Structures are given as structure tokens and as C-alpha cells.
Image (tube, rainbow, N blue to C red; front, side, top):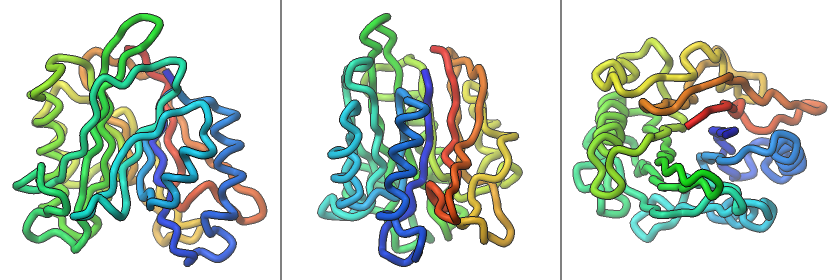
Length: 251
């Protein structure tokens, strides 16, 4: 399976030559070239979600907005129509009340944070696995810690399809040696496949300093064969202000 985590960068027309409309042809060419099976997109505004559904004809794309009215950014999970069935999909909020839309942890930014949890089944072999796509808070360290812990607990003790392999991906807004990522050590059933991938946030080549904040985390039962980044750039136009991270994995 070719699996990708891809922070698309919110489209508020603030990025000049790297506005979303100018990046769209590069994005489509990269996806057509690499043909990933599953893609976890972050920072997907409603009109961007519509664009994904209209242009990724070979994929289903699921997710909902993080706001109280299910508006705003969403964590979109896209998967190939001919390869997978969707058995279950839900969005939960990273908060003390995960079923309450728009809820947040104390000390968090004004942005609600969510996880899209999709359970997929391979059509060919019948393997069932869980995909969890998230974007942790950009200001609240404790909120990131509690959010990551909440997601891992959910993967370990879900109320539906327990015991299946799980893939957690997204923008954690924390570097590999941060205290937040130490939480993974408390959950030995999970491995950070992207620990040594290097820079993922580059700010269109202008970040000072560039950092690694995008991750793919695999549970027991999943093997990572290789991992790389998509570094496409044409005349100063990038896929995003993050490098998408691509892994070849085997269930």
C-alpha cells in the first residue's frame, strides 16, 4: 500500500504565487504520478474538500469540518474506490467531550482539533485496518500531548473493530525529540515510521528554521518497506508549505 500524509495548507489567498489555485496542477500531477492508495489531507477548507472530490475521480474523500456547525477545516481521508470499502467513519474532537463538535482542551488555541477515524477493508484480500488523520494544536503543548494520548487510546480500545492494525498520520506541530512525541514510548504497540525523514515543514522554502512536524505512525501488524517525501517544485511553486510524506507499507 502507498500511504501519504499531506498538509495542503489552508487557502485564504495569502500565499501569492503559492496560493492553492496555482498549486493545484502540481498536486494533481504528483498524485497521478505516485498513485497513492490512501491519502490523509490536513488543513482542508470546505471549498478545498469540494475540489478534492471533483478532481480525484479515482478516490472517495471523507471527513467533516471541525467547527460547531461541522464547518471550517477538516481532516480528509481519501482512498481508492476500486481497492477499499469504507466500513466505518467518524470524526471525534480532541477534548474532554470528543463527541461535541467544536470542543477543545483547556489551554488550546481557538482552533478546535479533530481526528478523522476511517476503517477500511481491502477488496482483494479482506484485510481490515484503521486510518486516523489529525492535526494537533499549534500553540498549546499540553493540548498536543492530551490530543495525541487520546488518539492512541482510541486506537488501542475502540468501540468498534477492536484489534485491527492502525495507521496514525498528520501534522503533529511537534518535532521528533519533543516531549509530546515521547508519548509514543508509553504505547509500545506503535512505531514512528517517520522519525528520520527530516524536514517536512519548509514554508515554501522560506521557513527559518524548517522543521519536521509531519508523521506516519504504525501499529503492530504493519510493516514499513520504505518512506520518502514529495519535494516537487516548479518556478518557486510548491505542492504545499509542507512536504507530503509517502510510505510503502504492508499489512
